[in-house]
Length: 78
Image (cartoon, rainbow, N blue to C red; front, side, top):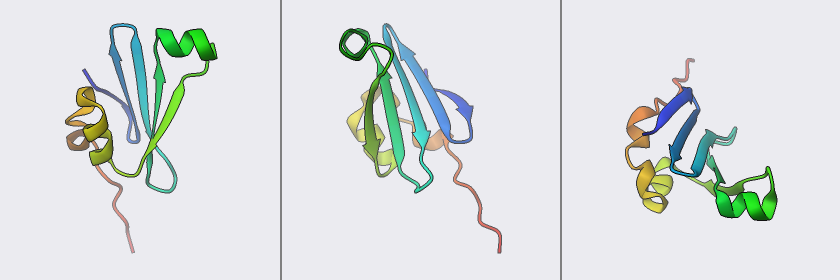
């Protein structure tokens, strides 16, 4: 189950896979993944993948489908 940590950060733990999705300052999204393979090769560092939109995240990771419904974009005041 996707859990919202903050307005711009989400986590998902499925079995031995721990994933964190964060919104970058430029509006893109970064996914950090920790699983047995990344821990064996990279130690404490997870793999990092960057996406332009939440739709791209949902398309690439089936387990993240629906995350766009949880995210509320910031409102711009003028």
